[in-house]
Length: 446
Image (tube, rainbow, N blue to C red; front, side, top):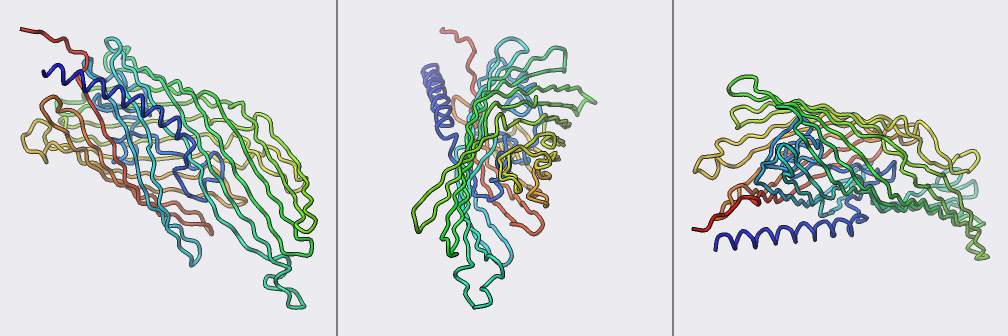
């Protein structure tokens, strides 16, 4: 009967993994943000950490734990136990407060974030697969201005001078990956993630004026990307004394062109004559992924307390980005629009006593913080810097057939701000289920 129950659970987990991957593929274009900053670059970059790491603000590069899937450093896959199948799914909900000048606005979003799995293939060789987000685009707002002197001309006519520009955008990018991690020498592992990278966006700006010409101009920017992504990782773990284990990790990702064009369509309509002129422009092979490099270190004390720090560099500054030339009105690639992004993360995970009978002593308690610089400029201004503070719990799920799975819950406060622009404060709740099952044990019948 016990064997039958475990087989049933395996079938359910396999079915759940398949449905989650399908859902992520279908939902790949569903926006997970309402930030006006998502109109720049490839959007708001997503948190690619899994449920255990989100309580530590995404700490991952130097973290090695065979009980969880750590996609951000594929070298960690080699730590998965030979009898284990790990399946991790996550979702999140958030409330964001937008503030500009004296105006405030609240918005809510929720999304199914990721689905990943990991298992042992051969001795010292682990594998992982899944779907994770890369970036998100979603915004809608408008600005009002006046041609000439705001509020009217010398004759007191204000209506003829007013114009409105409405901005709207949606889309995003995701990656489905297959990864391997191999311990090539005692304590030293290397790994790689090979990803299918895909997504699209549609951004529009509609200009309406109340002048004597009654003009409307609608610009629509679109792209559709189907490409690949390649990332590598390494980790080295060694005992430094009888109580402490030190792990050093490194990652890097290959920057390359995505082979997708940036398209622009302009519709210029005279609302009195209903005559519309259409023009199109395009920038060939306009998008590129940046070269990335990260290093991290963590210390595990008495199999109870893990503390660590990560540093990540993304070389966006060497990439051109398509924009309309204000002088020629042509759509073309410009340098200096994007800039290198730096991110520093610190975090800690503490479990009082994993083998204790007390439930509270077997709960993981997590804290973390991160700071990231912007990866784009907004005109002559810097984009928003980002500060994140997080806390979370890893709650063990215990029953007659499982004592290694966990419910991971974390809360994050994210502050994004740029000088003289919109300030965003986001409160986010992340919920992740980590199923850690014994799949490959041989059973004996007496």
